[in-house]
Length: 308
Image 1 (cartoon, helix red, strand yellow):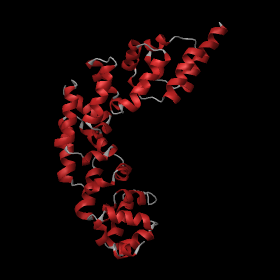
Image 2 (cartoon, one colour; image 1 turned 90 degrees about the vertical axis):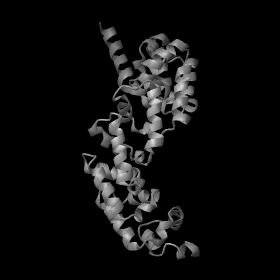
Image 3 (cartoon, rainbow, N blue to C red; image 1 turned 180 degrees about the vertical axis):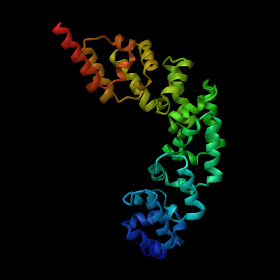
Image 4 (cartoon, one colour; image 1 turned 180 degrees about the horizontal axis):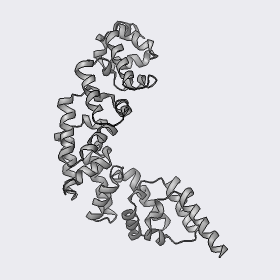
C-alpha cells in the first residue's frame, strides 16, 4: 500500500490484511467508502464476526465485504441486527437470510422503518400473498433499494397499461418473477412489448406472456429476441407460424439458437422427417429437452413401429 494509504484507514488496514485482502483491494474499498478510514479494528471485527455468526461462510465474507465495504462501519445495534431480525421473520429457513445478505449486502445499510416496512406494505397492496412477500425480498433483496413512489409505481402503471389490472394480477407477476422490477420500463420493458406487437402478438397474447413468461419481457429485444426471430425465419417458418410458436411457447424467443433451437429443428426435419408447420401447430415441441425427451420418445416410437 502506498504512503498515503498507510496514513488512511489506520488499524482497518491491518484488519483487512489479516483476512487476506491484498493492498489493491484495500485501497479500492477505502476509496469507495471513506467512512472506513475512521473505523477501528474492534468495530470491523464485531461486524465481521456477526456476519459469520448468522451463517455467511467465512470464505465468502471477503467477497461480501468487497461488494459493500460500508457494512464494516455500520452500527450493529441500530442498523445490522434490526435488519437481520426483520429479514428472519420473512423466511422459513435460517440460511435464507445469510444467502440474501450475501447476494446484496447493501440491504444492511437500509432502514427497516423507512425502506423495508413500506416495501412490504406495497407488495401487500398490489396483491402479493403474505407468505410470498418474504420470498420476493429474500430472492431479490435489491428491491429494498428501489423507490416505491418512483420505480415501483412506474412498474405498476406499466402493467396496468397492458391490461393487467384485475385484483391480485400485478402481485402475481411480481411474485413469479421478482427480478422484473429491476428493469427500466422505458428502456427495456416497453421496447420489448413493442417488438412483440410488431411480430403480430395481440394485446391478449402479450398479457399472457407477461403473466406466465415475464422473463421474456425483460430481455433485450434487439440483442436477444430479434436474432431468434430472424433465425426462425431463416429456417423457413412463416410469420403466422412464428406468431403461433411465440404465443404457444414464448421462451422460444430467448432460448439459445446454438444449443437449443438449431439442434431441435435439425432433429425435427432430418431425424423425424417432419415439417416445420407441425412444430408451429405444437409449440411445446421446443419446451422439452432434446436428449432426455424428444430423442428418447422418437426412438421408442420408431422401435414400436418396426416391432409391430
